[in-house]
Image (cartoon, rainbow, N blue to C red; front, side, top):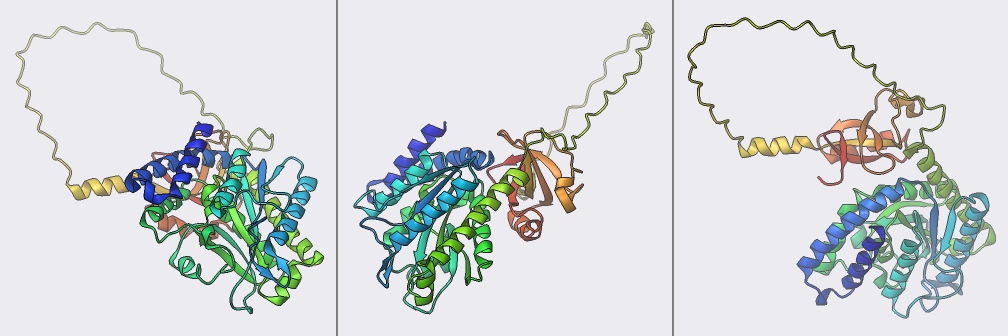
Length: 422
């Protein structure tokens, strides 16, 4: 299933680059259905823990990226990628590190194909996390700071595409001015909320958190319709380590000390992400310390009474039964209200292979307040808090829940089971 879905995904992505040759309506429907099915598979993969991390040194070869002060972005990105990978390999030997490139190279003379090749490497490696490293640039040389991008779109980010990253080739961005392409991409973005989009956001928050400890100017998390993030089927981020167009930041990100600090921040974010996934999101209840829900005692059935022969009664004439009256059909408004109330929303804080008591100490301040719902996959027991009629109401509470469970995210629930469609 996973291999088949992957190759179907690649075919669709290739077609996306030639929108004039495709039937747009059919392509939109096909991509949305394939992306949704593939997303469900990848969402389950994300819930198995982090085993493979793919590190992408942005640009390379004939695509140098930004150039300032005699430095090319592609070289800075490669230095950072190799140092981050080495630190993960040394301190987290249980995790496999895959590099999209370890040398000064490009994969194609065409940037779109080059970006797709990077995503292909990550997908074929079965990556659980994709980190693309870049350096930023701006016409205003006074702008500085660090930021992390995730797949998405908003009016703010779309308008800033013209100003931010102007030194980089615009082909890195999906062409949202094309109606067919935009519809496909937006369908993919919508699908992310049901799959691994939340995981990408968790990683992005952790990266910015550890950048902040370096007293760098925190520009936050931004949503951008980037090709390389669109084509990678796993939690994915693109992090900007500083502005090459700012003289002070260029000096910092090209220095040994500056790169060491930035790599350490990225490593600490990776370490924290992996740890939260292992301990908080995914619980292995085989440990003795886990409090299991006691099985209910079997009900005691009363002893059967001795049979008594029924008394014979005189025969009576059968009475005519009244004809059943047809039930009134619900009005359209009532039907809509009933259907809407069928799907509820909650904030998931933990998942497990087997049942966990709602009074388990690992729920912290939410001990006794969580409820269990079921889902498919190895970690089929999901534990969540809250019960909301719509996603927006649930999302409004996520920030407070994340103070205890930083990886918490919104899920849709119907009849005690997690659903992936509204």
